[in-house]
Length: 445
Figure 1: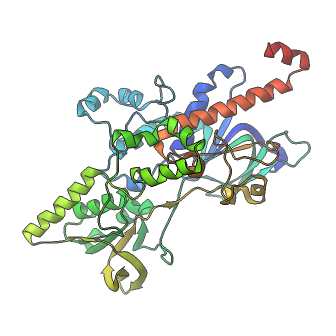
Figure 2: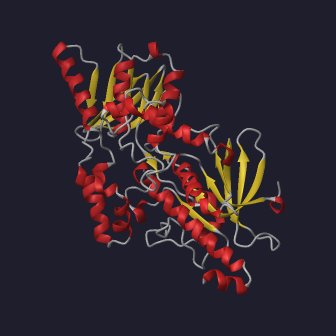
Figure 3: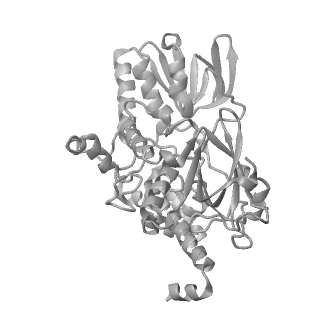
């Protein structure tokens, strides 16, 4: 489709994970007063169907946030899209309450997300990847819009749509150590279950997990459960797993009000957030998982049959294929080698960066002294000369301006509501400006 015949939408969302799913909910609920001219929204998702960290839906894994921090409740406690509404519809509300647990399994929370996503399927184009965002340059085209170029992941066909607002939520990019490449025996945690299910468990006699965070600990426990014949090595750069601080005062850094404290805070106040509270989320593990793994290791020491090994203060210096094995060069003082049948790098992710999608248009947006995008309080990229070509919002990649909750579920409902409020506010102003002068005065009065 050429640009001149492109469709125009109020909102185009890039990615349809929990963040933009929550935005779709907020746009529907907050825009209900615009029934005469409802908000038009379209989302593009490169996956073939809705999915959120499917490769880490391990049997025993639970959420690390309360079920009340769902897609809508903190913004609208009466929302029909809440986790409680999902449980009621599934006939499990009473049984969930009887669990006396704020933290559902990751599998159940994923079911909830799928349940909500099913109600917005008409607004989503799955198997579509956005390849570029650029301003509309056609003088005959709609004023104040962006062009979004989209490619179908199957037949590779390309189309263009236009948007008054673009919301980027492409998620995080897997991070591996330098000079480490993925293959059939070297995995990143983001692909774990897919790779594990493709392997023959009987041939996994020795496995390693690299990393010190929640995912690394959960995969280590999974291997220990699923491969009773295997040697399981946990390669940890610290002396052991560090405890995630989920105590009430520390958890306040995830409150919606903490975003203002961070955004409008001084440089020293922002630094204090990271210095004192990074242990709420980064390279830390829940208490119950730490204790479970330590107990297993201790029980094996007592029995004399040790197959769970913790290699602390150790890093992976190199990875190479040697015959049927993968050889890890481990460094703790002097180097040693470890041959395994599979190794999983639970080494985190790179933050989302919209520059690739924006291409040359990225130069239109302001950056700070550190070279990072300047971002308004409503999560909008700041431009040098107003908003002549439409607005770009980010769901993720805003930690430097908005703090710890930038890409987390903790502030999801409130963040999406603020973006939706901003979009609807600009829309109202633009509609007002399109009215004849006498009608504008009447409306303003």
